Image 1 (tube, rainbow, N blue to C red):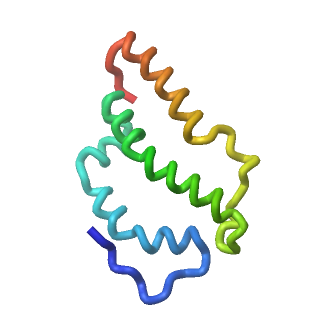
Image 2: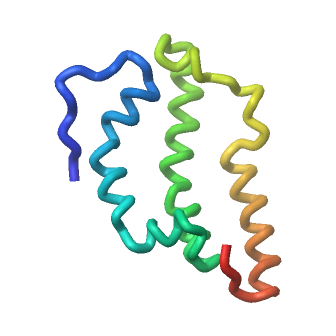
Length: 109
């Protein structure tokens, strides 16, 4: 599925992302699973599925941000010192937490 690109993209990166992904976000918000997810009515397994399905997206974003950190569109939002944990470290921490939760059994998040 490809979203129609606007004739002119805003100069601000966050506004450009918002505009370019508006249609797909609107579609996603109407999926029952995501509605329940937003309400916190999802199993621990469902939560893990969503988080890990986003892994490659966020990994690509991190890599591109690092490669393009000096680009004028990114310099206003590039704050590496404010990032406590990189994605890879977060995954390791999450896997440890998930192993602990497996012992306790399934739970709602």
